[in-house]
Amino acid sequence: MKAISVEEAVAMIPAGASVMVGGFMGVGTPERLLDEVVRQHKTGLVLISNDAATPGKGVGKLFDAGLVSRLTASHIGLNPKAQQQMLANQIAVDLIPQGTLVERIRAGGCGLGGVLTPTGVGTTVAEGKRQIEIDGKAFLLETAVRAQFALVHAFLADYLGNLSYALTARNFNPVMAMAADTVIVTAEHIVPVGVIAPDHVVTPAPLVDYLIANE
Amino acid sequence: MDAQEIIGRRVARELRTGHLVNLGIGIPTLVANYVPSDIKVFFQSENGLIGTGPIPEQGMAHPHLTDAGGRPISALPGACTFDSAMSFGLIRGGHLDVTVLGGLQVDAEGHLANWMIPGKMVPGMGGAMDLVSGAKRVIVAMQHAAKGKSKIVRKCTLPLTSSRIIDLVVTDIAVIGFPDGKAMLMETAPGVTVAEVMAVTEAELVIPDTVPEMTI
Image 1 (tube, each protein chain N blue to C red):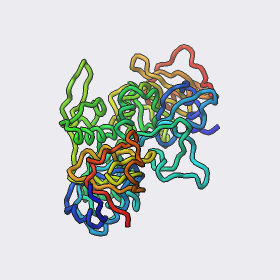
Image 2 (image 1 turned 135 degrees about the vertical axis):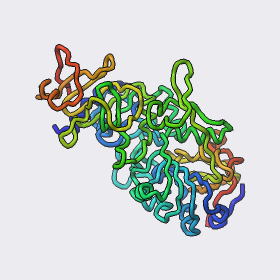
Image 3 (image 1 turned 180 degrees about the horizontal axis):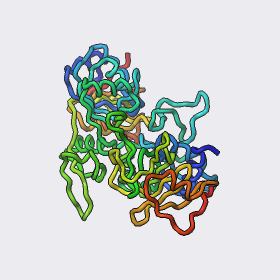
Image 4 (image 1 turned 90 degrees about the vertical axis):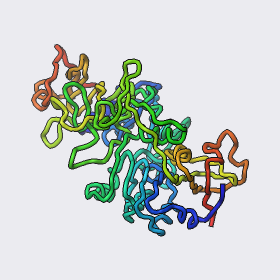
C-alpha cells in the first residue's frame, strides 16, 4: 500500500476507465475521490455501483458532470438525472438484481467465472442468459464482473492498509476491494497499526494499492 | 382508520417472534409501527443491517446508519451489520422468513409485478427480485386499486418480478391467498362485503363458504 494525494490517485484513472465505486445511496462512498474525478473531468467512465445515488451526492456527482458512458447498477430510480441520461441514450444502463450484482462482483474478486442464481428466472433478466438446472431447480448463469479501478470508502484504515467499515457504510466496499486491478481507498480515520484488532479487519491490507493521505 | 393503516396492521399480524423480516419501501415500511409489543422480530435492511430501529431523534442521525433508501435510521441493541454479499446471501439463502413488498400488479396465479412500467418508470429492480425469489414467505402490501383500476389482475401485463408464486396479498379491502395456484379471498376488511371486493377485482377470485373479517 502507498499513501498518495487525492490528485495523484485520480490522475491514474484514464478517461473511459471501468470504475467500481462503493456505497449505497451515497452512504459509504469515497466522496473526496469522486469530487476529484469531477475536478479532473474524467469522461466516458464505465461505472459499476449499486445505484446512482441522488444528484449532488455519491456517484450522483458523476452524472451531474456528465462523466458516465455506461452504468451497471441495481437501481437508479432516485436519481432523475441518471434516468434522463438513460432515456436520452446518453448512457447505456445495465440494470441487475442487487443480489446478482454483488455476487458477480464477488465472483470477479474470488477467481470464479460466475455464479448460479435463481433470481431472475422467468423474468426479463433471464433473456440471453444460460439457464442451468441443478437438482430440478432452475438457475441463471451470471458471469463475473471486474473493473480496472475500485474506489472504496472505509471507516478506519491503518498505516498498512487494513480496513474496517462503519454500520451500513460497509455495503459493496469490501466486495469491490477484491475485484479491481487497482484499489484506491479513502478512510474516515487513518490509525496506527494495531488499532484495528486482527479479528476486526474486514479488508486485509494486501488488497489495498493506494490510501488517500490526510491533507 | 385509513387504507394504509388497515394494510399495515393486518400484515403485522403475520409476523411471529424470531422472524427475520425485510420491509420494502412505502406501505410495507409502515408495518413496523403495528407489530404487537409481545412479538419480537428482527428487521433487516438490505443495505447491511439486522436490527433496524425507528427514525432517530433530532440530532441523533448518523451518516453511516441508513435504510435502503439512504434515510437515517437507528439500530436496536443486538443489531449487527454486514456487507451486501452477506445481506443477499441471507435473502436468497432461505434465511429470511418474511418479505413484505409493494406491488403494481398481482395476478390470479399469484405472480407479482412491481419493478417497472415500460416506457414510463424504469428505476431498476434493486433487491426486489432477490427478495421475491428467496424469502420463505412473500407478502404483498398494496392498495386494492389505483386510479379506479384493480391491481389484482387476471394476468400481469407488466414485467414480472419473479416466476415464484407469492403467498399473500393484503390490501385495504381484502386478504388474498393462492392455495392451489388460484387467487382465493381469505378475508375482507371491516365493513366490506365479499360482493364489494369482487366488484372491484379484475381477477377471478375463489370464494370459500365463509370469508371472515380481517382482525386488525
